Amino acid sequence: MTARSAASRDQPRGPTTRRARRAFVPPQHGAWAFLALPLVLGASVATWTPPLLPLAVAWVAAYPMSYAAFGLVRAKRPQRFKVPFIIWTAIVLPSAAIALVWRPWLLWIGLAYSALLIVNLRYARRGDERALVNDAVFVAECAGMVAVTWAVGAGERSWNPPALDAVPAHVWILVTVCALVLFGSTLHVKSLIRERRDPQFARASRVVAVASVPASMFLGIWWGWPSGAWLAVPFVALAVRSFVVPRRALRPGAIGIIELSCFLLVAAAAILAAT
Image (cartoon, rainbow, N blue to C red; front, side, top):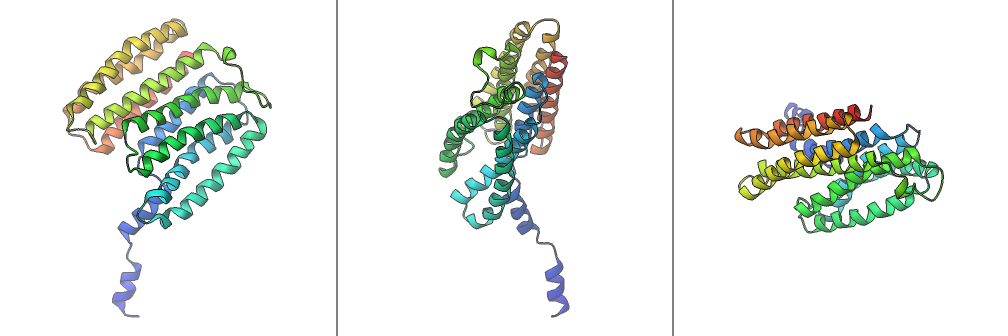
């Protein structure tokens, strides 16, 4: 072997390594914050119980698993998604099984989420997974996890989940908060990156952000004053950012950091309201 061939062998294969890493970890980094926020919001009003841990693991790992599954369906080189799909599935299935042992009624929740996943899969097969409707379905999946998290903490080892009339108002309020934040963030980020040349997205983002402020005040009143007032604080910040951020030419990474900061503010507001 020549020195040149040895050096070539030892050089890092940047593009190849990045492609392999992207097969394991989806490149949509903001999605991780979307997955974490409902768990934090649900946990803020839930009673701690061991099944919450495998539920969280299964919920988070299901995202890269589904990403790998979509890659197997529509990627030009689907074979590179085979190993990631197997590995993530090996994490999701045992975690889900453990949660099911404690809360058998999660089976019905899983079936409902599978139906929503079919919608995501159809968009992925068409190469249109970034469609606004598909994003809205993902937002609905995330917002629903707020209630699921609470229910796992409050439920029992039964085939029947907690009755709807047994769910506290605070849970439904946080479900709504989660949906407003995530849908508003979706519009905002689209208006800055993918749809930056479409002024309608910028207007829609601002309308949703501004309208969410009085909506959050109503939710705060429903929650109960004065603690409910905390819920309005992050929405004021989100409304301000919808006007300030578009005036600056920011890279996607900087936009993501701003959105993550807003999510942390929402989580902190929920925790403060619940204490």
